[in-house]
Image (cartoon, rainbow, N blue to C red; front, side):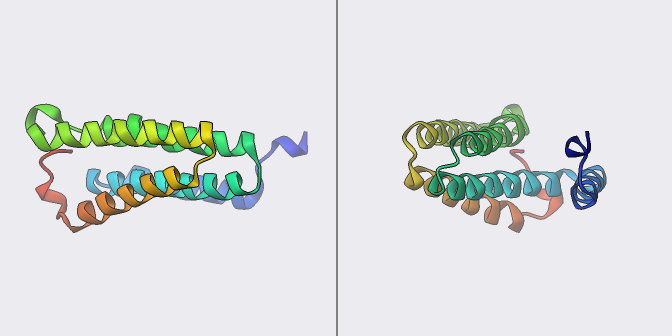
Length: 135
């Protein structure tokens, strides 16, 4: 029974993340999605190198979910136009590369997606919160 309970540190981290999400503006939430996906990919890389196959798969699935159901779903295709469509295609490409990384144990594919996410995150961070048009 005790093993099913969260440790105090896990509980604190969950409350801390929940509070951050509840108080974040939309611009900050997108940064949190980028950060979460990049963290999941880093974890998957370590697990892949350590032969932790189920854990690697779970981390890659989390990254795909954050990219497709988080970042992708946040796009406003109508008002974002061409840029939003290109980002949607890029997010789909990233999801496909992550699936490939999972099936083939490809560290290179993980690194490719992580670099793409990092570049997009840096660009997004430079946009003032009132200026987002595509997301």
